[in-house]
Image 1 (cartoon, rainbow, N blue to C red):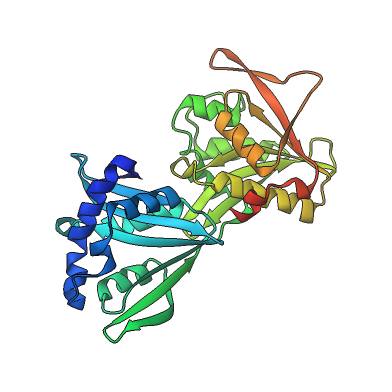
Image 2 (image 1 turned 180 degrees about the vertical axis):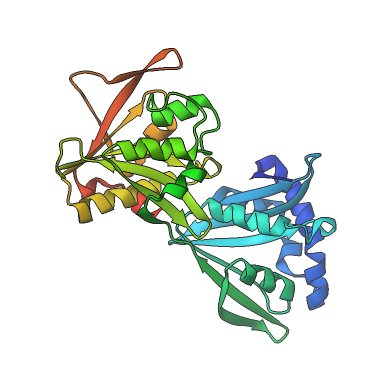
Length: 324
């Protein structure tokens, strides 16, 4: 099974699967006019444009499950979690729900189902959702609303974090973008990582949510005082990149540095060829600054140049970053 973002050309198949999957719900309520069985393709297209639709496919590429969500006013509203009747009770619904949550780190999630849909309610509660209200629609139908809150936090780095972090660079190119020439070999072990950290005057932070650790970075004082803190070794779980975790982790670290460490400036360096990281740093509020001399490293037989970036005021943090 593979879970990916649905494409517009998938929507007809997803709607057909929706009609099939909701037959059991219609039978429970003895009502075959429930909205999921009446939804049109045009309505699904509007939902596609408004938010995220994921699809689960089998080894032949057939769509066997789907879920959709959109974000509004700090909450993510999840709906139409569907699985082909022949593939139910195989963990596909759980995987889809976890995948759509991963697109929205540090958010409140909300969904609803009918009060007679005991299997749905049990699944949601098992995955951490809690009932917060019940609304009666008519004499035969009640909707149960459930919510779940995910909060990204930072804590001090622990040596055993390295066991997972060293797995997040899948090839040496990405590894060198992260670590430059700090390590003589690739891949490295957790012991290698901790040995280097113990030899440097740095302290680390690890980002985590209820799923476990999701990101990491280090801090150091390049001038021997807390006027400036320099970020380094910034990395996010390779399975969670492109989902906002890096942006949120960095914004939390920036706020920590300004509010608790009381720094005047935060700086970092990023390789010119690491465009994804560069855009992430810019989205948080870091700005490119000119140096008298460009810092360069010899990596993989090439000369890689560094771009210097800094942020000098907590108010420079992007509003999107603080709300991500």
